[in-house]
Length: 114
Length: 116
Image 1 (cartoon, rainbow over the protein chains, first blue to last red):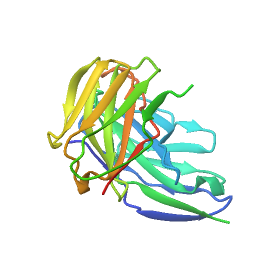
Image 2 (image 1 turned 60 degrees about the vertical axis):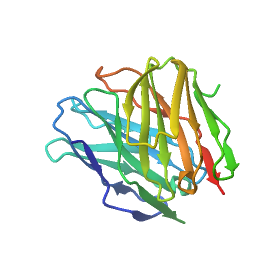
Image 3 (image 1 turned 135 degrees about the vertical axis):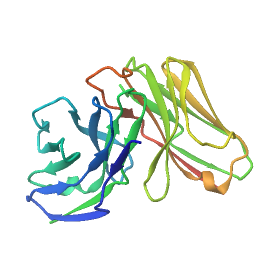
Image 4 (image 1 turned 30 degrees about the horizontal axis):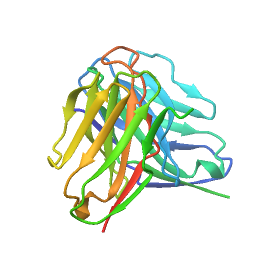
């Protein structure tokens, strides 16, 4: 069965510092996609970054990078140079091989401290 | 232009009423979803449609009935609303089934349903 685990319910980071949000996944599929979404207090779900299971390079999008360790089944999100606007809930998600379902973790609430 | 839109954004209603939430996507995607996000922010998939066909129907009370008139629309009708139905409901869409790379979902802004 597919499963996504986020073990950090809440995280704090000083402004301008980097922070890593943890995500582990469980699947027997060979082909899958890993995603991170941001949900600010306004409520919308914002797609941040994608990593395919066959991608050898870690994905990067601006200040976001995904630390993909396939053997350990982890897909941690690294946010560099944190900004106050990064304060939000962050969800890790996986899309399975069939492609018709996304599995979400329970989320990590990130607070950036000035 | 909004990629995935939902109406209404807020819905306040009495227990026992029937209500609908509408969703439209202009991304040309094949697959659409409904999620429920509870007060603890946990996202639970309810339904998924691919080209108007139901492909995922999780354990959801049959008071919830999705309808997809075409692949750009997926509406959610809820009968006999209960207090426990209060939540944020998200519509989402994505492209492709099983085609690698597996593309992301795009979410609508959410509908906050409050049942009194």
